[in-house]
Amino acid sequence: MSGVLLILLGAWGGLAPFVGPYFHFAYTPDKAWAYTSGRLYLSIVPGAAALIGGLLVTSTANRAIGIFGSLLAAVGGAWFIVGGSVTVLVVKNGSIRPGFPVAGSLGSLSSASRQFLETMGFFTGVGMLILFLAALALGRLSVVAVKDAALAEGLEPSLDESYPTSAGMVAGETSYPISTGQFPSVGQYQPTEQAATATQEQPITTQEQYPTTTSPFDAFKSSPPSDPS
Image 1 (cartoon, rainbow, N blue to C red):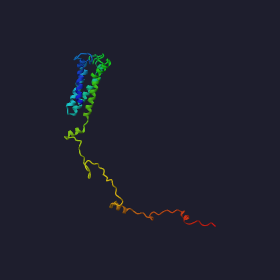
Image 2: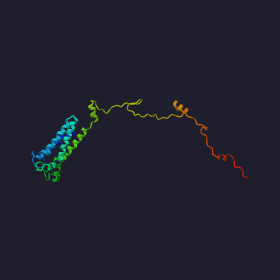
Image 3: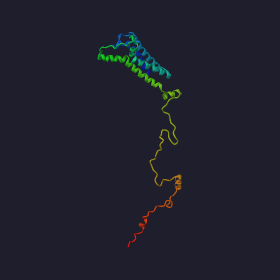
Image 4: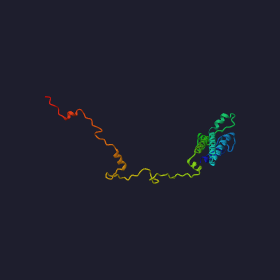
C-alpha cells in the first residue's frame, strides 16, 4: 500500500505544475504544459524519484532493492520540501525557480488560503506525505517478521500450533490441579508410610534431657515462716 501511494504521489508531484492551470491551481507561469527549468528540477525530478521508488517497493521481492526504493522515494520527498530553498542559495543566476503561487480569491477561498493550498499541493504537503510513506516502507523492509522467516524456510505460518502437554494433563486444560471441593474427615485421613516413619524417627525429649530450673524462692513458698518469738 505504501508503494502504491508513493507511485500516485510521485506522479502528481511531477505533473501538477503542468495540469494545475486547468483548475486555476498553479504556480507561475500560469499556463498548462509550460516547461521551465524550475519545473524540471523541483517537480519532475523529485516526482520521478518518488514514483520509481514506489515501483521498486511494490514490485520487488528483494529486501535490499525495496530498501533502496524507499530511500530513493524519501530523497524525492525531502527535495519537494527543501528544493526551492536550496536552489535559491546555490543557483545565483535565478534560472531554477519554482515560481510563485497564483494569488487572488477563488470561489469561497481567499487569496491567502488559495496560496497556502497551492504551496501544500505542489511542494510541501506532497513532500511530507512522500517522506512519511517512504519511512513506513523502510521500517517494514528493515525488519524480518515471523511470517517472512517462515516463508523463507518453506513453512506455512500458523497461529493454531498445539503445544505439548505434560503427563496427566488434557490438551487445552490448565496445568493447575483440579480440586474436588471436598476435604477428608478426621477418620478418613490416613498418614502415609513416609510420614509415619518420619514421626517415629523424631527424637522424644524428656524431662531429664532438659531439667527445669528451680528458683531459690521456692523454699519459702513450701514451708511457712518460723515464729520469731
